[in-house]
Length: 290
Image 1 (cartoon, rainbow, N blue to C red):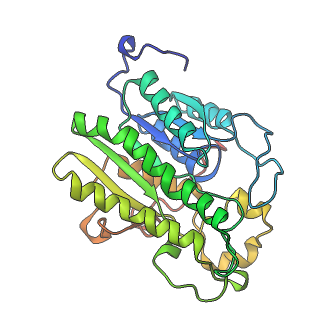
Image 2: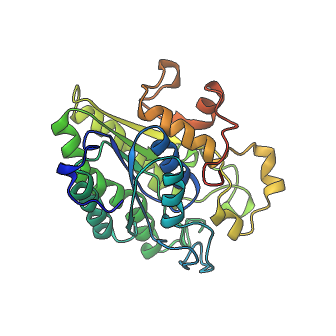
């Protein structure tokens, strides 16, 4: 894991994935699934070590998971992980992490913009959300993914191969059925995901026949540690048939080396739960817990 001279590494031609938000949830499971599929992985998040506390939706209690825990799980499946601390609210820290991954591995073949802003403002009514909250949401969900694309896409174009996966949200394409505090969603978070969803189409339009693929991934409802911290009632949410992080990660790993089927309408958004069902991946076991 500590090799720094990629030129002397006999795995130099092994593909590399760069994954944000990889300390837990979909990001962690995707890192392990991609490692098992033959990728070396550069993993980023704020939480490097177990027990660290960072603010999530106004709560600073430590959450389960860390980059080091993900790296241990990657190693259990025979993979190689490079842990890189970074904060999507500090785009320069993420660009530094991407450049460190390039220096370490010599390449990045797949960028998975999975991390998402989880602070205040996501659920604020339109009349109450502040400019600062909106800026933070857009910094984490739009500006940082764009900065990573600007850093890593040129190498993919030069090699004539690569993939950019952006995690979006169904709320970006659907009007809320009710206010955020009554089972719906607000303006700020969905609008940032709607902005992010326009990026993949721009990459395809600006770089046709380049060998680079760019897709929006929509995970459906996934119960996360942050949602549990916020006190979500999992029994109530079960009626919406949530998908597991492991199932979404299995779809990510499949898409890494397979082109989407025509029926999935990949030029708009790939609905991961439906794909997982079609590929018989819904019951994929967690690789973090293996």
